[in-house]
Amino acid sequence: MNKKLIIANWKMNPIMRNEAIKLARQSDFSNIVIAPPFLFLSDISKVLKKACLGAQDVFWENPPTGGGAYTGEISPSMLKSFRVEYVIIGHSERRCSLNESDELINKKVLACLKNGLKVILCIGEDWSKRKMGLIHAKKFVENQLLKDIAGLKENDLKVGKLIIAYEPVWAIGTGKSDNPKEIREMTSFIKDILYSKFKTRNIKVLYGGSVNSKNIKSFLSVGEIDGALVGGVSLKPNEFKKVIKFSQTR
Ligand code: PGA
Image (cartoon, rainbow, N blue to C red; front, side, top):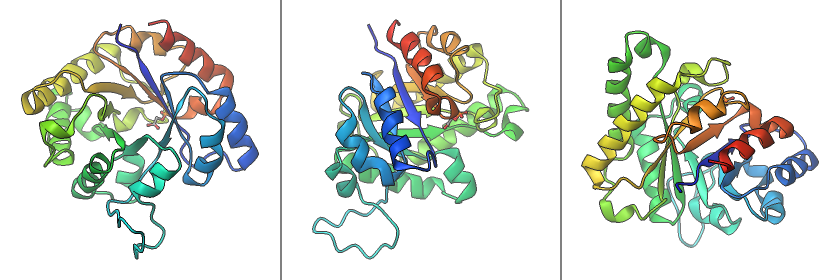
């Protein structure tokens, strides 16, 4: 059975270290990736027994002996030293608020894979594209994906190294999730692009955008959708547990 993967993206939450530790303990189940803010990685790496640790970003340079003059940044090796296995790259909040370009995102993707970190690459169209129809959204997503994975070779992609999170921007944090039929179509489309590039169907494609305990079933029942990236609800332990429970019975 293809196990569904759930990513908990805590974004800039919670404020306090003790709250973060508590939340991590409550979310510690297998096939879950917990991506807290950088500041809490150290504490949470000591708490998790079943879930994997993820980071919400990374820098693309990795000076092997340290000494990187990059104020404020965190390298792949630094993340690995805290037992981080996964990195979320290209989240739309970073693309929009920090102007992260596809070229910059591509550098981060390549740096992670080169340095043994698994990539959760977020892609997705905004409402201006989607309102013109799924065909326009697909065109946008294809272009974004191909730019973000430029230079990747089949050999870089051992099973599980690259995960795609399809997250329509208009569905993130709005309470308006996309509909499962269209997500299925987009997911198959993304998988076909990846197949034609890498000749593999082993790359997971997840859905993200207003996932909650009520709608998770409608997404995970669709065979093509390999899991979910959960933002707001990953901060609500009782509700998140219901999401996890459903994902583990698939
Ligand atoms: P949301 O966030 O679940 O709050 O919509 C999703 C995300 O972080 O991309």
